[in-house]
Amino acid sequence: MNYKETEKNLETNRLLLRLFNESDVPEVTRLCNNYNLYKNTLYLPYPYSIEDALSWIENHLENFNDNKLYEFAITDNVTGKLYGAIALTNNQRFENGEIAYWVGEEYWGYGYATEASKAILEFAFIEKQYHKLFARCFASNIASSRVIEKLGMKKEGVLRDQVIKENNYIDLVYYGILKQEFDFNQ
Image 1 (tube, one colour):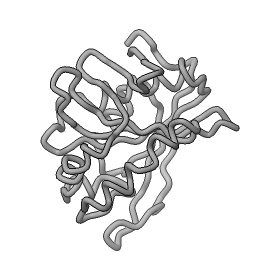
Image 2 (tube, helix red, strand yellow):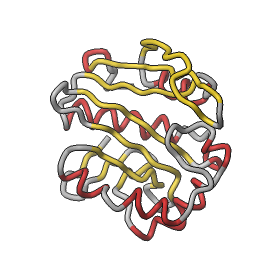
Image 3 (cartoon, helix red, strand yellow):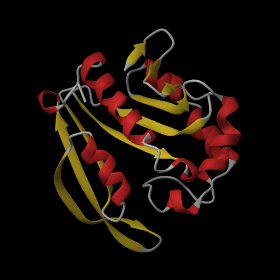
Image 4 (cartoon, helix red, strand yellow):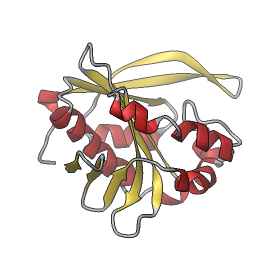
C-alpha cells in the first residue's frame, strides 16, 4: 500500500482508493441501486437515488480532514473505473475504528474488497496509529465474512437479532484484529 497524503489516496497493485467527487454520482447511483447489494448492507437505501449519492458524498472531504471518517472510492488504478467504496471510522479516544465496504455486484469475485480492505488496515495501523480494527456483517453474508477472515480478523461474537431488515431480525457477526496481529507482509 502506498499512501499519498497530499492527494488523500491509497494505491495497491490494482487499485486506487481515492476520495469520491461529484462526477462519481451517476456511477455510485447505478451500482447502489441494486437489490442484491442492498440486502447485504446495513445502511444502504433501496431504491438508491442520485440524491442519496449526493448527500452521502457531500461530507467526505470534511470528515477526512477532521479525522472522523475516511471514505474512499475503490477504483481501477489504470482505467479509473469505479468498483465500490470502503470506509474507516476513527474513534480517536480508543484508537480503534470500523471498516465497511461495498462492491458493485458486477465486480464481485475479483478480490477488490479484500485488496482494498488490506490497504485500509495498513492505512489505519501505520498512518493513523490505530490499536484495533473491527468489522461486522450479516451472518447470512458469507462472501463478506470470507473477505474479513482473509485479513486475519477473528470472530469476536454474534449479536443476535441486532438489526431489522425488510421486517426480519438479523444477526450481526463482529470481527476484530489488533495491530500486533496483522500480517503486514501478506
